[in-house]
Length: 297
Image 1 (cartoon, rainbow, N blue to C red):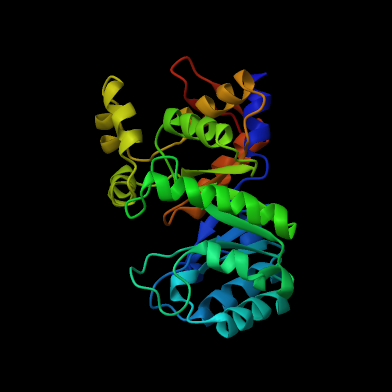
Image 2: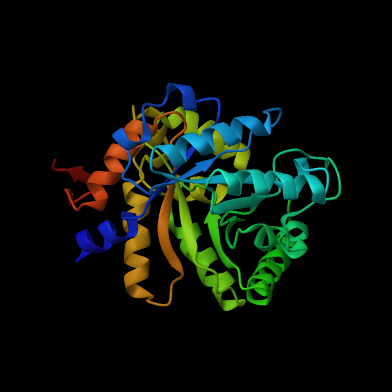
């Protein structure tokens, strides 16, 4: 039962790729199943043409590219319309709308709701849209603002008939994710949720990125576990298996949960992450007594 539930959660997993690392990535079809969603990370000071190039490659290689639209870096409606039209022309059917890492808006868009409410995306042919979720909070946005934004996103999805869903920042433990999902559902969220997870990469690299993204609650959970943080910092490769098992158990205990799948941030380890995730998705693993997974293929 647990094995089948974990395979189901992982079955339609997605991955993140940056335009900078793409030249080092082998053909996507050699490591990913056809139709896998590949999210294309926005990088400040990187030309939009690089996103177009990577999206076109993903389409050619049988994948579903999901480019990030970082709204604070988009100067105006005309530019936004042209960007989305260019993406649609090469076969993109889905985008992830985020505020972006730049602190000051380049033009008229300061937050994602302004883009969602503008109607540009459905007018240009995009109705499936991801938005960001923050189970452990955001460094630059308070909880009141996050709650208001979540309510507004639910409202605009209903008003415009958008297929809106949430992709979360990554976490190291299931407890903050489960608590957050229950809280936003109780507050009225009806959008399905895809949980962000670290890929199979260096724990030291993950700690560095995680601390800058505000994943304090995950680290607090690890500190309560015997040697949790030390184990994370000294392991050669991180595996998100314990977080995934916690999510599966929570879904079994709470069938109304809106958690629908997982998204991996490989941080340069796409092939290793994809191979491991594919084995989990196909049920080729056993759950050990210490709540870790041992792949069997």
